[in-house]
Image (cartoon, rainbow, N blue to C red; front, side, top):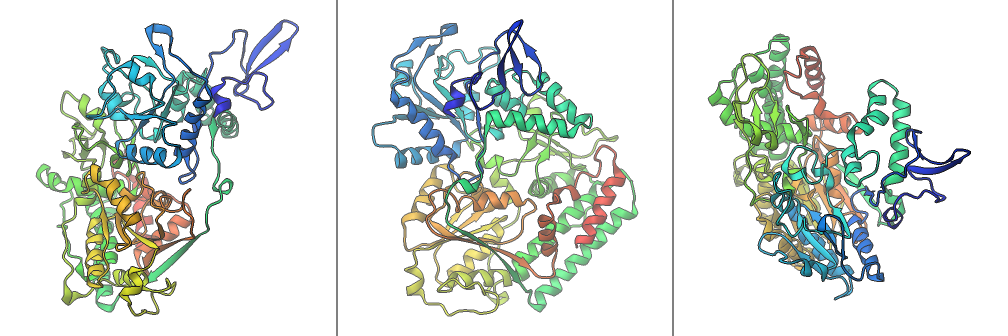
Length: 620
């Protein structure tokens, strides 16, 4: 990163995007990506992209980079262009939940008093340029940056926009994709091309140059040349180290098959048959464009299969059969849960701007910010928050007649809360999967044969264990049953899900680290994937396979990362001879399962959607 901050390495031994070539006509500058040349020196680029996998210490790397300023690169403020003052300060822009993580890392790794950091967010804000100049690091959020920027004023009157920062660091920069949104008006961030634009990597500050040199080659079928150019560009501007470069303790990944009890199997088979009937109905209707209700039924039946694997006899159907053509009133009651199911399966793409909404992104939002909720159509098309704010007339999905539409919430709380609560009933007993989990948690030492041997419980020994356990599930509903089962076994636990206020989250993590009396934490998978450091735990449980295996890895990386000193064990539960077992096979073959369940009106490609449904039927 220090090399990148020196600008283009025209004469360096390691090649850069630009190099100087001497000819009889004099020197000229050669773009090594496209082989284009020019006589004028290209605009400098002093930035780069750190794209290490999760858990390798990107935060610590950036703190170390900021600490190099202590060597005296900047001693005083200088007047820059446009009456902006140069300050010796690093501005770090993060999602709101991660401010505490940065402050904790600074406190842990920096000698007291050496790097002075300040927060510019909500009530705690810097008031003068002098305050900035006396600070080494300023932490703020994307929402604060957005709020202090206006299209007309372009940041005038904001302290953040009145200086030229020593450097600007974007944490979780991939969260900002839509170049037309307020949040990215100042940055023009989006995909990889616009990240290059943000770091001012000339000539790729111009989207058209990136399209000409790389994107169009790919679109025209020249894949090898496009890949070669992109790799060359990334090698110059992007740092990505694999986990082999950092010594982490070993990680064992185990799979735990669970067998249904006979009565659970009977319930599962009943729901499985209903799912098969729902898919068959859609297939029989062929390309009928009024099938939106039938597709929603398919989604509901698939979710039911997943839930009964977790809940066993505690499952009770909350779905009523939907007619093939959804009325507006019907869709208003179904939209949120259907939207949640769709997002569980993978990123949702906005119909208007083509930006994507990833499942973890709302967990990094500021819950105090009021924004227009996005639109979700019964044909499963989606209009994002930014485009919804711009809509001055009735939104349409493009079908005639227009499909039913409803506002949905993209908040992490809503992702988890569309299912009703459940009370673990003694007469029904615990679901087989939850019994397997509690058996393993109680085992001393941890047994890998949790589904064969039930070890006796010795509470005094259990409470003295230093090893912490984390239980992940997609749904709070599952964690409700797990929590009840743990309580019945006299095992205390912490709870961390979308209902926990932002201000209380770091406190829960701190208590989990230091409170020896509570060694189990229950997390929803989306919360666990959103910027937490959970190295106090050495054993993690995934209660069910997720549609998106990347989300699973994001959660597990919160445990197996820099700072972890002990071997980590991960346990993935699945029900034998069930839909879940097929999901795992699909994950292992690296097919994107979300592709099986797309909008039934995906640009009129009805035959392709029927093929996807046939594939889905084979999984059931």
